[in-house]
Image (cartoon, rainbow, N blue to C red):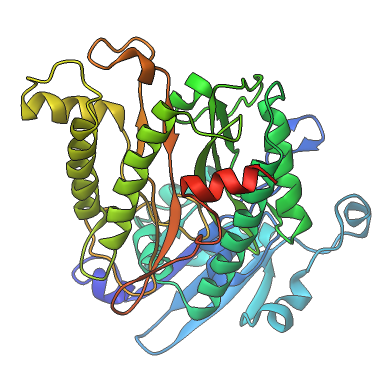
Length: 410
């Protein structure tokens, strides 16, 4: 693949270097929870920091793999736990050869007349390549083109992640009451995920009561929930390296009032129409256009705008401001997975995406009736593209008004 992509440039021999993530620290001797770089993890399954995979190709039929890792260190392992070590690389991970990470600069220094490809390589080793006057190319696009199509095993892991997150969202709905802190629901969701096998949360969750739901990435989760408000929860879990990503919005009181019900049903209708559009051959951009069209239709039909004489152009502009984000994104090892894959790409079987329309009404909107002000609603599901249609992986998480109110009454 790399040989074909680089015809006319570089050398016949190719060397790809894919690096692990380092450990990041929040303060002296206090590390952040470690998360492996997804491209490196996808290719190796190796969960330790300070490592690098080297793929060395001398012709079109043979490729040698070398995994550079930390050497075993009994003293350090007292603090951090056991290391794989150089001697166990081949047996544990099926790599041709193991080598000390300290020898990576020396290895790079000996690679003459090679075309280099890198991914996540640290600044020090990139500087070494530049000092050796070695040109190199980014490998991310190639890895993302592999990662965006999920294997059967990956799909099963994403399904498990979605199931765990859906169960956690239900329990979080049940735990909702007025005058509790948003952080309580954050903690409830995380507890339920971990209790049912998740390794961690997939990202800092949004738990936004009332007008705070209009802050799309509100993650402070520190305010009290009020009786007459909606609460928007956008959360997911990491299950064996694969993410889920669900958004639900529900009334703190357990019952939607008339205005909340009307706006919620408008968003739900948009989401269901967008999901029905999901199939091979369409793109996320195509589904986004469907979302925009249906939002305009639904909001105009429910009479949310004060001025009934607004032009179609003005309504479109206002609807775009009421939902300023895309309809969805790719999902997998990362929440916003395979970032180099454009949303214009046609969907294919075994891709996984999110569908997440929303409406966020500012508190000071002069064009919208005041009863809708400060209301934020988002409904998000995870969708697997199948051979001729789609499968909603988060279908166990309720989203109709009747289902939500029934759960919250228990």
